[in-house]
Image (cartoon, rainbow, N blue to C red; front, top):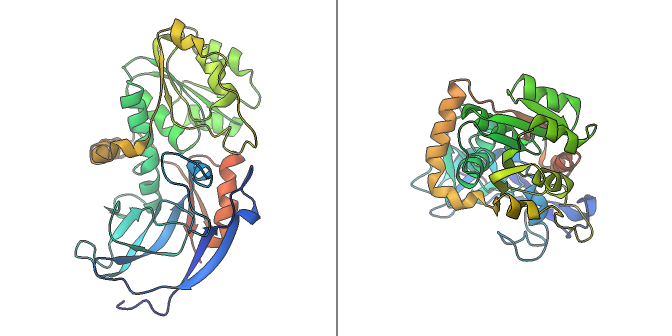
Length: 340
């Protein structure tokens, strides 16, 4: 295709900063013609959009690790697709790519932050999951920030989510005892029966404090935190001497409408000479290739599974699909597949 002048781009833009869960009033659905790329640019037809808990934070005003999405801007989103027109020497028509393309059908890019991928090797959604940002987050959060050692005891919250499910599998590869915390019997069964976790704790029906004591009677060496709040506070009571607590996210607080209390059991860090450390996957970009190569090898060997919860729909379905994250309805990596 040499011109895109006949194409219309459907987009989802941020209309207002939400309070609590982002409802319909937070979004604006727009259309605009697709323009031909300038020199050094190319056009991507987006096939898959990643849905991530961090998106809720991007919608808020204020200082954070990335600038907030501006009112009226296309919602920031990682996505995958195919190059359909190119005026860039490094990207050809037919190349499959991933990048921060946004919640829209077509994206213009100059190649910054864009990765070429091979859909014949693994399905495209996997490049947004295990071999994408979520897999990188699990890898560097566990191995670098968590400083995992063979044979340790690892607890991970939101264990049936995109990051948590990979963390647990990576820990098992390293010979660790792994306890996952998830919501509901189906998710807990998946963790143990399919992913090989040693124990799964159902925070919806179990007494988490008692269950963790039973699952890790000698304490926890690494607690990988995805949820914050009460679960974090409980996990702090189970730390062993020298334990590490990587702080990946706090999904339990993202839609809170008021100030959230800090953990009351933080003195456990002092008593156990433990440490907690927040991290951002973007700090490890220069090492993504080595991590992707190692995890791709484990995937081929059957040591790792990548589960994508793929929801077919259109760009207009983005807002409702995003809410599945905060209702705990997804298992694995949530992806919107553009089918119309």
